Length: 69
Image: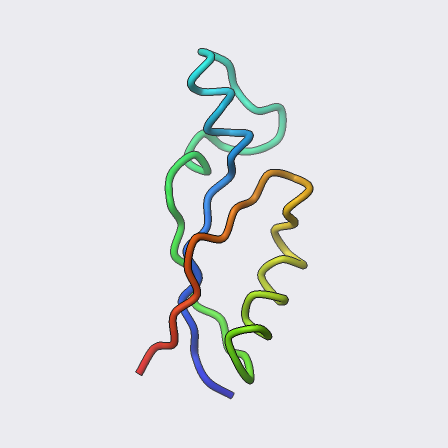
């Protein structure tokens, strides 16, 4: 397995903050990029694992998946 860094944020949180509101369940910090390290066999596997924890239908947006040396 290789180590990958996934860059992710939450679009819904970002939109709510722009409107002067707050998300009902997620912290405001999710409007900013988060960098999560995850072990996977390949880039697609890393993306799949992150999407299970942070699903697209809940507003999470993956902007980059990068292999770490």
